[in-house]
Image (cartoon, rainbow, N blue to C red):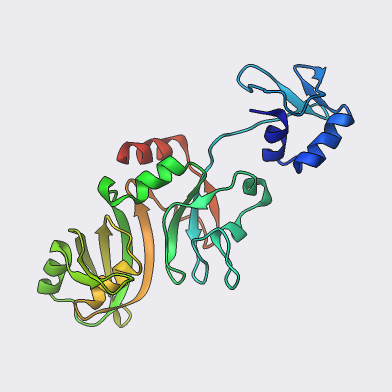
Length: 242
């Protein structure tokens, strides 16, 4: 990687600001003052320092967030805050993005990463990675309705074309206040899919939370809006899913 790109990506400023650092002779490679911004560096075999502090760079970052309501699974938006707005500045240099969508009024697990290949594999219906949700619904959910949801129901997509959802798993948990708590596992992520699936059997989702993506389970110790990096074990489990 070029030296100026490395320093820019690790928070030392823009390319022009990096050039000023080089002119100040505070950037060193293996103890020698670096003068050329275009020089290639390999952090596996070389040590880069700025003001004698070692520069550490990671190619990929993986974050688990407990997304609150009224927050978009997007990188930017003119009207609403996004999951990126909740991140510390130290993570912004990695250009992370949410892997898949979670509706604005839906809480729960969002994976943020700059590993585009892994993100694509997770959201691809072909990989059949289950997304696990808990829903609180109004309306009567009969045994027949559960069977229909599990075998696939016909709903409209964004272009008003109908499609049959893939097989799902549904488990009725029990009453919550005046609603019914239900958990559902699906392998797709169409717009408002869970809500529209329940609507197709005469029920309305009043509250929705994503609990897991495959074997990656939301850390319930995270308050809404909080996040942390994945552990090595969590990342390994996620990779095995795809």
